[in-house]
Amino acid sequence: MQIVIFDDTTDKSFYPLAQTRAVGDLRCGILKLRQRLQFAFEAEDNCILINPALEELYRLRHPDWNLNQPPHGDKLYLNSRIKIDDNICKQIRSLKQDEALVCPAGIIAIRSSDQLCYGFEQLPHLQRIQTDQGLYSQVADLVHDNARLIAWDFENVFYEEENFFETETGVSLLNPYKIWIAEDVHLAPNVVLDATKGPVVIDEGATVMANSVIMGPAYIGKHSLIKVAAKIYGGTSIGPVCKVGGEIEGSIIQAYSNKQHDGFLGHAFIGEWVNIGADTNNSDLKNTYKNVKSYNYLHRDMQDSGSQFMGCVVGDHVKIGINCSLNTGLVIGTGSNIFGGMLFSGYIPDFSWGEADNLTKYRFPAFCDTAAIVKRRRELSLTDLEIELLKQIFGA
Image 1 (tube, rainbow, N blue to C red):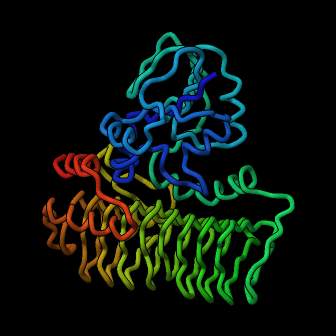
Image 2 (cartoon, rainbow, N blue to C red; image 1 turned 90 degrees about the vertical axis):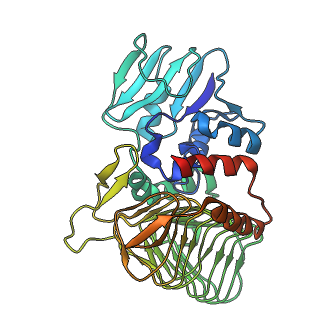
Image 3 (cartoon, helix red, strand yellow; image 1 turned 180 degrees about the vertical axis):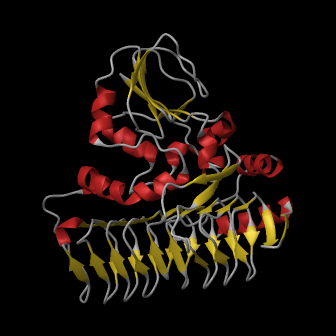
């Protein structure tokens, strides 16, 4: 039986992050959503259904993947939004031919030999099996499930019964058998890795500078740098090739982004190629202690995050100046460049430029110049297909 992972038409609820990648490639826990499903259901290859707007870019980046062309024969279709746990996995594995597992938020999984394509909705010939829940509905859901999934990934993917390793003199390890350290990791003196409340995973080539504290559950991605005296609290996932400092709690950074300086980032989701200036802070709790609302691209209005704690959602290629204040639930659209001392609140449209009370449209050629420079610093290039996708977002 072949495994096919599909995005559905609710992918706009995960914008701006899903404007430039499939929902299945959003990080939550240690792994991306797609990677976890492939592991749990033992997928042998990458067969995915994604928004056609992303297809050319994905074909360039992943020429060996099977995109939007499901194989013939018996297939198990898995929604990339699945909130994985033992119960939902058991229900999915029990599906018979031409059965679909559904919940109020959409189709969770289908077992069928049908050749489905992106955007399918009505499948009247299928027997529908109802369950109460099983899908993420918005970015806030990923932020709030991050700590649980770090622990899930550790126990199911990274855990080693004989987890022996050596660290530099002066490094403190609390509950060391819940700590996983890859090869070529550098831990400076006076680093504290505290796994008493959840696992800590430091991936290949990462560096943690002196006097930093990382409290689990936490993940530090490949070749990322944790600056001097950083405070990383539980529920935080830092993707590969990031530089972070200051105070971070309950947040996800997708990859290739920098928050190098002092300042607080809490219960936030940061995309790729983002730079957050010195002493910039985000609020993740309202003074009224009521649930935080956040802008949803699908519904085009503010939606309840389901929690008192929700920081900012920041799209790819966003630049945030020094000493900026970001209000609870703020959503910053792809490609924006913001600065100034006034409070940023609500929703900042894609490719905005300026201060909170004076936002204009970013000039696209100027944006591309900056994006190309930033990528060259990581020995990468801004491809023509990336430019074309970003131009579509710019003109939307």
